[in-house]
Length: 157
Image (cartoon, rainbow, N blue to C red; front, top):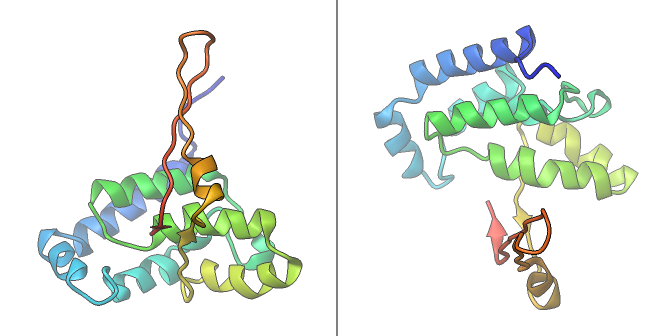
């Protein structure tokens, strides 16, 4: 098993790190969290339209890049490294895969291209009641080699 990054994965990391170093310094981050959106819309457009971040792991048929979750994780790692407030996690990591897997063909066709190009952001809302209780599972590995955990409640954005 080769766990080394591919040249494409290294390029994603380098390109994103360079861009964030130039455009997401401490002053820009502080200003971004004070906006009504909670992030810098101009930088989000650059990340979405210039680099295709929200569509990185979306299928090409919906305007995505067709990459794997690994490339998306690398993008999240770099945005986290910069402490960048952005809709990337809520949109591309939480909502988009659920729409891809569970949405109707009409929902996928209507939502995923707009997520891929960054014109639509999304959040995951976990319903209350029994669904939230079911998601609040915990476990341990004292009796078998497994572990679990979890927490639910509200909108994950």
